[in-house]
Length: 184
Image (cartoon, rainbow, N blue to C red; front, side, top):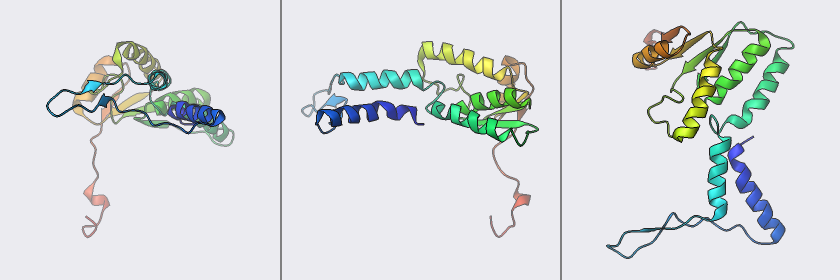
């Protein structure tokens, strides 16, 4: 389920019911004469509403729509098999929520692998309120992890200081011994 498609689908359905073809969204700035600054154009109300909707439902990310189906699939799998460990790599950070929930359901420990940090990533752009909400969600999620893995020494040191779990540093890459010379 793609949560960010809902406003577009709703808009198309409403326009279909009303007998109007879907209109395109105007550009963010109006064209200006050469040498004069562009003038911002106020976005239509449905575009502003769609942006607000995306900000609210995309917590922690736009993949949150597959949380329930993933947990349901895991629960079904656990009727015939039990994992020894659950390993979740993020982003998307929704995968960490799924892993934490499946670990509770199965009794297996889970490990969080940060390919990119969540709230403390240098490029995080969720704003103050969202950062506050997501930092609590992240801490609650990570409190149930058996350990953390990340790809830089700096992040590993920081995670070890911020969280109670053991942290391992594993660099991106491959072992050349795993590949014959002629392939590389």
